[in-house]
Image (cartoon, rainbow, N blue to C red; front, side):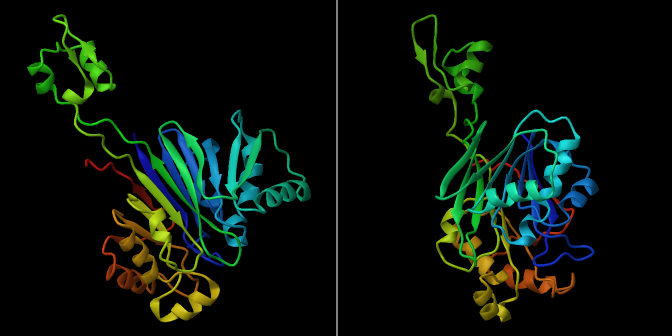
Length: 310
């Protein structure tokens, strides 16, 4: 099952000609999940030729303008196509008011169901076929949430040689064992799935953090992430300014990834407009000194999330 991450916007505070505001799209087979919806999201979706009509759920971190100004356009545009499924929106308190007031003031024509869920407690907020989404609190100037999409564990590797050694004939009985069931042989012996299968293998985990002060407990929420998208708004020299504005430096983002344990890769996002494309390399250099598997996310980038085999 394919899982791909599309970086729609990497900017913070204000959009730049080649840097739209923060938004990422996660595609898991036929399901599309949008995390934040900054200005320029529609343009990025069109550039990447993504089937935005199929967006199932939108997760909003907080209601600052640079994370939600693209949302009214997405809602209106979705009425221009045949849509039978509801659109779910999750976010902190005030997100429902923002959606409802936008619809009222803009007199939106909406021909599908919009279900807005305000999050008041951390934990599992959404579940689908083979995965769940967990929300956790961050520390910003207004209520702000991080998110992790976590897949269920996969069955272990099937060992055909073990099935043969136990006298299980090839065919439907093998499939039964691979589904986790047991089979009964003609001689009365019972063979269970654990006799021929390896231990369960982990699913994939994607985590999204933006707009927060640094605090050590963040790391606990993103443990074992295969890809962590994390704000790295400032260089280390501006740590005091970051603290005052309740944002992260790239060094602090790297500490989160390192301390979480099991994080495979981290992509920095939500860059200050003060930094040119070339200057962003300094943020990357500072982060890699602490967490080497760090990359700079870029508008229009596609990142594949692969399975771990152990």
